[in-house]
Amino acid sequence: MALLLACAAPPLPAYATVPSDAPVCQPEYADPLPGDHLAEVTLCFTGDNLLGARMPQLIERYGESWPYSAVGEALSSADLAFGNLECPITAHGVRTPGKSWESIQEGRNFIFKAPPEYSGHILRDAGYDIVSLANNHIMDYCADGLLDTLTALEAEGVAWIGAGHNKDEAFASCILRRNGLRIGFLARSVIVPAASKAGDDTPGLAWQGGRYSDELSAAIQDLGRRADIVIVSFHWGIEGQRRHAAYQQEIARRCIDDGALLVIGHHPHCLQGIERYNGGVIAYSLGNFLFTGKSQLIESGILRVTANRQGIKDVELLPCWVRGGKPEPAAADEKLLKRIGEICRNCDTRLAGNGGEWWRVETSASATQ
Image (tube, rainbow, N blue to C red):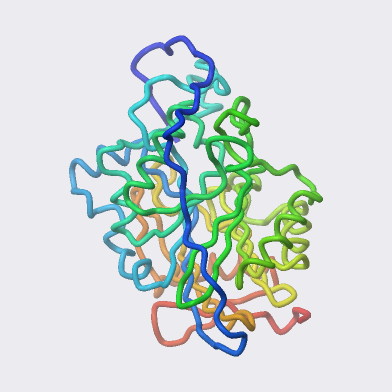
């Protein structure tokens, strides 16, 4: 992935002060329905969405509907769609002090931002209801860039999780209501550049170390008392590695043990395995979804989970290629299916065809229930 910057970096000021009237995401909190109500929700999840880098040039050439035109129906048909937003939405021009000009020139770091005039409504129109901001690029343009992102998302009715005006907001949960069910989200990033963490009075992201923590355990259990379905999102793992790291499994399984129904990962720029564990589902990495870069063809997919208060009913994957930056379904592509099948074997799961574009994610015969 190459990123060319035309001018030298400007001076790096201190973080901006949070304005008193700054918008705050206000998710809808729902009263529970009777315990015997069997309402279901269909939840769709994707990996990294990068509306920066070369994407603005592609949008200018092909139009604002182009990025998600091949997958918009799949996302919009879900009761709720979630993805990771891998860049701030801002026109701010001052880069983060956590990524030096030298490291950017040498290709060891990258900085991204998306145009505020259309990026928010592109996400909304694609069908996204909520995005994670807990990642290593959301602070690429300092506090101002993050605050601009919150403003852009709120203006389009897209909720966010994993970053905020201060530490309390960044680490807070978000609960959305669908079909009478309360769906709760938490988000953390294990990949944390310098100058990106939220402070007591400064904007930033929510972070997680490489070991399971008492803080995260308490947050999941607390959210479980207020929500019917708990989802935890992580930006983690090793770039380019299709097999998840041991620490990812340790953290993810403990999240499930503490009451999470789903753990959704992203950051490695490729798919990692999907695991069925203790009644829950772990997607270690859903990879790139909307993403330009060196790889013109990378495996991806949309994870679709149908669930109710009793737990998970179905887990399905819509296999996709990211082709020239754009996700495109390719459920009949034997090369793609073989590659995803090999990745899933790392988690003792397999894909099973159901006669349509979506493939069921099932536990392999060799796996223990």
